[in-house]
Length: 419
Picture 1 (cartoon, rainbow, N blue to C red):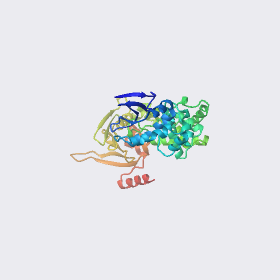
Picture 2 (tube, rainbow, N blue to C red):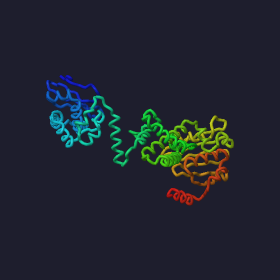
Picture 3 (tube, one colour):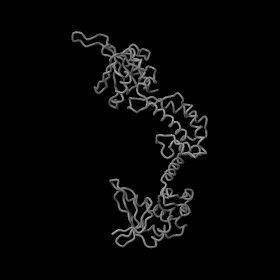
Picture 4 (cartoon, helix red, strand yellow):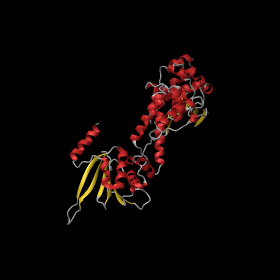
């Protein structure tokens, strides 16, 4: 038979229960092998109940001291009941100086106390009883998270100034640096908001006119890493020049915001518009070709006809985005009627253009001329696609040098990669 004797009815603060006539402290902590919360109990006395009932600070201090024992129990082990009981008198019934001394000797859960309003400076000095004078029943988990991220920054030698903190709050990255940044002016102290907006304006001016294109080689939503790096460098340089007092964390959050917004703009464009913005070819660029075949390294094929609603480039990059993978990185565009094609080797940033020299006659195999070239990232691939769609293999001449010598080409590729 179990009955609740005392509860603060707020969050996870431990309850006092009576079980089979015995007073016990009951708390939830950790999880079992199935990720279900674990519950622990251990006996207490009437004197302990009186303090728990009347003194929130001591109640929270006991909780903080017992939690490491719960963690030590793991997913299925028992609570060290003897160690838990041994904490009762020193935490609940001892003078403040003795409690402070105890907390300098034992493990305890600092973040729990910080979440419940403890004075962080006093906690750091080991004055736990004084720190708990401002304790509240309600918990503020974000306050504890902020403490921990500030500690991690301090370990890296990073100390945030008021403007640094305001910028991280503005982008929503104060607590989680990997979070996609957003503009959150309401999260900033109004007195600092104008200064924050001046930094943002500097960043916007630095990347005005720049864009981050899509990279279908890595899926439908992937963006061009080179474009991202180029924008990051431009924004970082401008912000550091105009605001040299800012730490790296706040500069990075501003450039991350600019790049994320530019990426979102590219993803929102129809592929035809994105293609047109990349090299100016647009819809008119596909006039020379009337029918093309797209294939990949897995044997999949897609036909494109000029009479269709979309450009050849848009259809090809859709084909790539849907099928490109670590084991599928060779794609081909072929004009069967003209006997020519272009093959892309995404794994090596290289390309081969193939032209038919002699048609197969009387059962003989056709003769092809294969020329190899290097490609400068996704932007280079886009230009090659557009040029081939406009004018076939002949239109690819300016994008060389081209070579038929495989050994010569491999040497050039290795030299480029080494650089």
